[in-house]
Length: 270
Image (tube, rainbow, N blue to C red; front, side, top):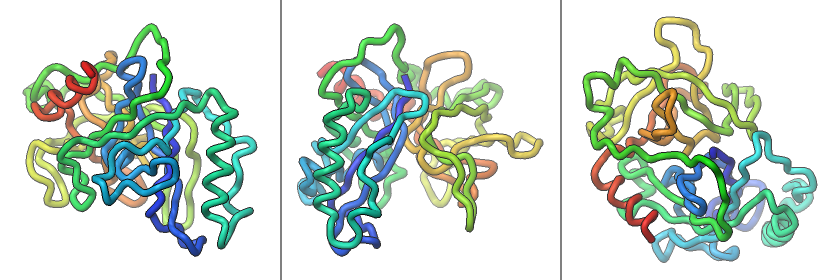
């Protein structure tokens, strides 16, 4: 039920090109046949047929694709190197044509939380992608229906399973892995926020737990689910990293809050 998202933001800067337009990846979870749950910063300002949506609020873009393979194939995807520096628009058009021949990549429409603000993304870092075609599965991810579950006394005793397609290692001179689904085991550290984020908005998770770092989340895992271990219940989505080396701790955007639960219920009902 967890897949990789690949999307185009027309007004994002790619320094290799003279014109704006950049591609990104994130992670998402099917929570119904057509609804993919992810982070708000993975859905904001996605292009609409190659045209920017930022000036209209950043929602409704369809330049986003979703793939459920454990290791999605990018064979034949037009490489950026063939278009530098003046062929950004042509790169976009050729990639859209490539996606049209790949049924494993399903196109959708991006929507962010109504209160999402890219200038303070961590406050409402929740988004969905509405797929053009439904995906029938025996089991979907289940956004928690237990409001405030991460505030409970037992929350720190539980284990959590983040899943994503991000890097396996990151550093000043390395970037290893990516574009393959992995999972990890983490514990909840606190819900006090970090980097000045208000209490109750984000949750800090750690994979260290007194032992050497053996897993966690990294760049590209954004939007991926954080399951309560042993269940399909999603209590948060991966939102931000604490360290540039992706070691130790990471931040999850809580979806056990009233506004998030109400918005997702409306999306699913619609």
